Image (cartoon, rainbow, N blue to C red; front, side):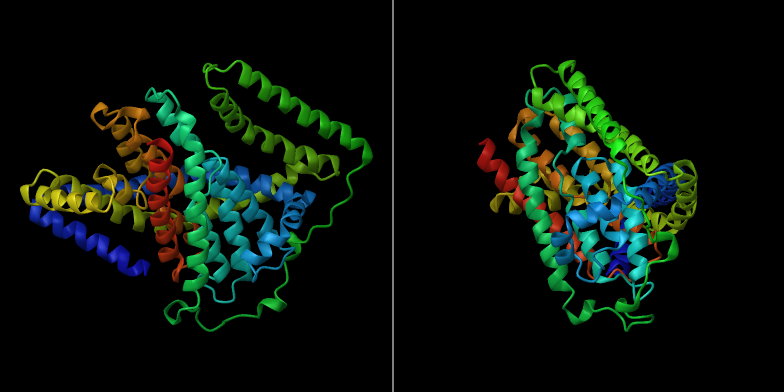
Length: 439
């Protein structure tokens, strides 16, 4: 399906560019997108990947990943029946989901790529997405979040009196999108068009974890427990300090969320090596060994990033050139009237259409929308609805390109339609929930 979507985007961009006389802009956008894919995304990702893959290796060696997977085994084995319950992929996926829930995108992507690498080792059809991969991508693209931190920050910066008002609605909307995404991915997997190719390697039952992933962890000594308690207590004090000294004393919830977002990454970066060191694991050596993978993963996703971002950049340039044309305005007006008839705010259409394609483009539209007094400003119904949509949807095509590109998956099967169904559900749920809560 991604083949047809990618080709359709390019043909649409070239056709619109030809009719509007903006082929030069479309071409320039394609070249700029290629530069962005390599310079602004792939290269900075090398450092992030090295950092988090190093920490992941420490956590695996210390048994933390396996402990996390064991704690949530009843849920995970139902979501991922094809993945052995004690496989490191389970813990890696849980860490990724946790980072997404807290809005830690810089941590979520490297952790998600590590999970995909684990899932690829269990994949019986190399080059084709497994059912577990598609389910994992559906959960990622449904973007379940406890804290849409970035969206709340945008609203606060725009002067909203209650920027945290969207947290509850966004959580409900993203819960709906996650349920829809998981349901869709399970049902679509049964359709003949999305069935996996014949197996080309060993059956799953005979798959064994490589020696480097086999964890033989020593027990945590009793004298280490006070040290860990001190570490937790120290961060609890940090959280209290950040909350009480927040520049927004009138919003205790916002202060607490900011403190949680600020401390989450430093806590993980210190807790993983501390816990491992208390179990006599050579943390520096293990970190360096895990970090070596970062460069190779970041380089491997460059072709996939270039492909998807070039197509998206061309379409954005073509539509930007078409916006002022009379015929384009008539089409937009007719579409807006049709959407208004079914209760869909037409002012949200650009944000909704661009959301699966571009995170930065959507953020720009969102900031313009919430700062427009004519549309109600940052505390208006439209702004809060847009915030819920931002918090309950994801840049689906970017996520799929990066995650599948990291393990050289070319046949994505039902991952794309499941992700788009999750996005659509998040949009509909956001509109309905915000109307019920804020009107």
